[in-house]
Each structure stands twice: as C-alpha cells, then as structure tokens.
Length: 119
Image 1 (cartoon, one colour):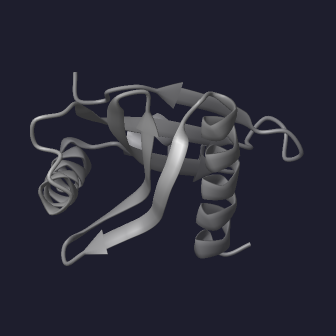
Image 2 (spheres, rainbow, N blue to C red):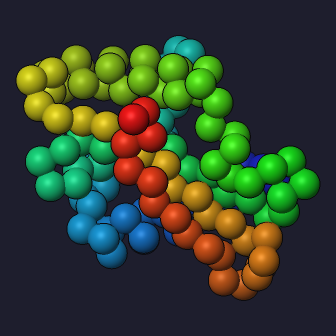
C-alpha cells in the first residue's frame, strides 16, 4: 500500500471515529500553499483542525512522534488562514490529532484522539 493510500485509509477511519464521537465533518484535505489540514470539523462550539497520523509499523517511531514543533507551526498557519476565511476569529478553535496504528494488528487499528495538541 502506498503512503497516499495509507493516509487516505487513516483519514477515512479517523472520520468514522470522529463522527462516532459527535464531531461534524466540514471538510477534508483543506490546502493552501505551504500547508494542509487533513480534517476540518466541529466539536460542539469548537472548530477542530485534525491531523491524522497512520502507521503500519513503528520502524520510524510511534504516530504521535511525527508531530514535530515545525509540523504544529505549519498546521497553525493553515488553521489561522481557514479561521480568517470563514470569520471564526472570535470563536474557539484548536488542533487535534488522531493516530491510527495498525502495528499490533493489521486488521484492527488502535485509534487515539488527542485534543488540543498545542497545549
């Protein structure tokens, strides 16, 4: 499976998980020059920008370990663009992370939601 296919599968699984936990999916793969948000959704009154990390092995580390300060900074830049685009500046928003980990069982991934990865 290519990295693109792995990413798409992880995002599909993450969307199902988020919907099951009350999130409303607004958009997938929002792109601007220099950045991309995997999933834009609402969690109650919050706008949530969700990064999805999918892994089939831990050869290069756990999914959460790929969230570097540089990656978070790029996500924030893209999220701020989106917030301004829809006039959401005076309302709450945050960056969340969903990890989809197939390393222990290729048939049943471990899914973890981490809210507000910037704090």
